[in-house]
Image (tube, rainbow, N blue to C red; front, side, top):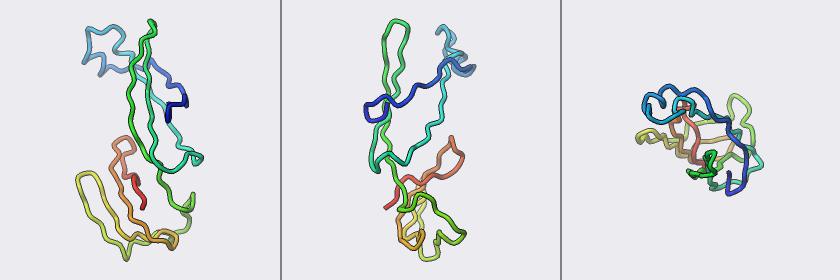
Length: 130
């Protein structure tokens, strides 16, 4: 669910030998995997949101887990051109798995950005735009 509204269902039952190895006494634990690719739509409003995963069993029992996220973007939906981003007048600071950039010029406008390392993507992702 996103913001309390059902958005999609995730396929369940993928092979997870690592989970089966960690929980050998739990029946079916090696077939407990699930996966999906969530495409963030531009129709989503800027700002904070909550995504909730709801797992249920054959008895109708459920377990929920939620996480918050924020939709951020530049004024333009697509940054085009080789010279559209200029960091010459900017400065950066490093902290753990984040890079903060102050005064990044993107398509002529100044922004402060925070980039965070995302293991799943194996790269940095912009998590804040101010």
